[in-house]
Image (cartoon, rainbow, N blue to C red; front, side, top):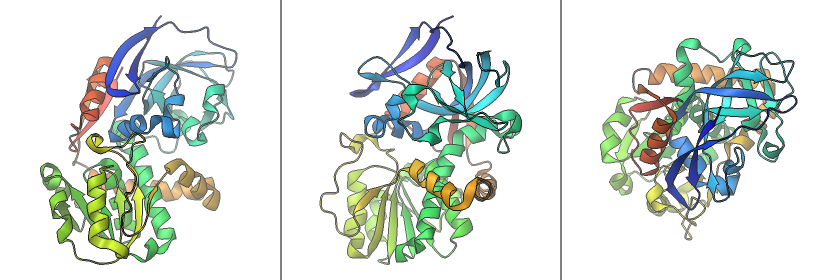
Length: 362
């Protein structure tokens, strides 16, 4: 057996190659997973863009100068040297753009485990957790595709809304969301609509995505990037999912000191990024842009409320989100790892259709 992987050149993200590697002998206590499915979204593009800065390239090692983009998806145990894990059972979690992965389960419970492989330990523990589907309360066999496409992005949106609401939205009356057609922005808009109805939701998007964004029904107002200067001046926060320095500058310059908070989240506009994925703030007026790192906020949420209550909070908002986005995104399934490589290259080139959700079955 050989393992197929997609290796991305770190200093040229639009260069990605299919490679075959020989698997090592399965170690003591280890489990070999056959990757069944994963989604490719703008979230994965962010992982690549800020890969070195946040350690995303370190989860799945590749030859020097290259990296494997992380994905979220489902896998099946095909070999096991772990007494607590049986061949044939399925899991959900963080996976490489590949067709197999070896993990070393630790803290094994009925609902999941943590990968204790040595090279993964320096990174956030959030990404090392795997759910065992047989006892996973979030698992719905009929909604596996939706979970892969929306789940991680929705949770980031949930955490942003929770963070903003916990600080009374920093005194703002409105939240401005760039790249409003993105799935993470939709997640935030849905959570704000459910939990912070007094905060006006303003979606900013391209002309080509304006109709789709409007039709989601998640925003009070949808404008294009060229209309930012026409927004009413009122205390606001901006959540930047685009990573486009010029767009962010327009928001800051328009609102000035009345901009209460500037939150940097994603990087869907690859054409205008600095070497770290975000350009400097260029002395922008208003609040200083601050990067939002979802794993840290997830840890804080679970510490504040405990696993059961926090899980229930997320689940309730997730159900509301699923109801809101039902029918807005057409899910496409593609077979083969080459399809994952091709989809990644399309997205890294800026070709993201918000009305599509891509699922790959390697």
